[in-house]
Length: 457
Image (cartoon, rainbow, N blue to C red; front, side, top):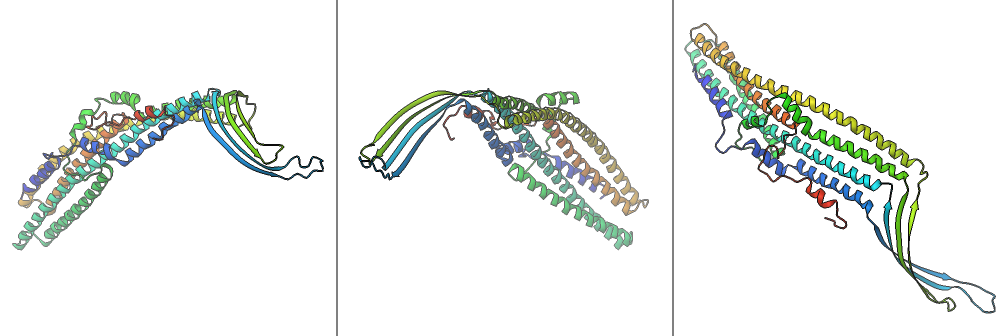
């Protein structure tokens, strides 16, 4: 019994971090997430809708065509004293049809700048898609690691419960022969009941983690492994992490493209103050049928075209208000770029420090586990000689269990902080992690739709 608890906890810890033969790696879980996560799929659909803003802006280059038609029926009654009798009135039916075309020629460069603004907005949203992808991957990784942690804790708690039951049985036997007191038995019973309570609580935590796993990744967690391979993707120093982050972070890229977009919007709104020139043409046919013999039926065919020039003078201040508004929005976007750069620096620093702290914490807890193993062995020997009480032994059991649970938790925290660091660097994407998936091409729909004239697909 003296060595059984130590051996049992060591076995439970080994099982918790062992890799089953058919284990699902964290990258396989992320690949599944990449293919099916609803949040990611919804963001891709939203990006495609933003792509259409470019086609909408480019419509300012294109002509508009329309067919118009009309029908009127007029009944006129004319009373006249003329010696010639009725000279007017009667029923008149008029039918008209026209084809109208208008082609903008110059609108103060508003269309040019609107297209550039839409292009930059699309690029901003493309970078935001990578942000969403990384957020989803971080949530999936955390869910994966939570299941790994909680399964390990459940194994430790089950083993603890089993061993404390043996200790309780042994104490009861010793009480029956008069070696220990009722107090010793009660203490063993209390620790065993606590062990059962902790095991039940850990199983509840595991089920909750599984539910989150299914929500994000889309399938039930089977055999999961300790994701040691993540270490291969981590930077060697804080300076390296910061340099990569300032260059690749998708939040910074998004903010910069939004700033460029707002700059073009200022120019587009300024164009409303400049002259507007268009080419307009129409072909029409009007047929009138009249039951008055003097008037008769007429048919008129007409074609007209011309250049229309409009010079804005004052439109109640609307255009100038739009210009002022867009300038303030540009200023806001500029400050948001600076905000993102500062935020990324802070995020990289905190993620790096958390990761280093957790790594050191794991090392310290390992030393604690070894010390607690030695302490438990010594306390059990001293208790056998009568120098220690059963309570001392039970306390030693609990301290060793706690240190093993702390090690499991520290490992989970280390990997989560590592994932946070990769995300702040812009490296927590399917492409950077080299996942075995077909990468979504964010630019494909953008290139296809920007030049469409008539398609509804």
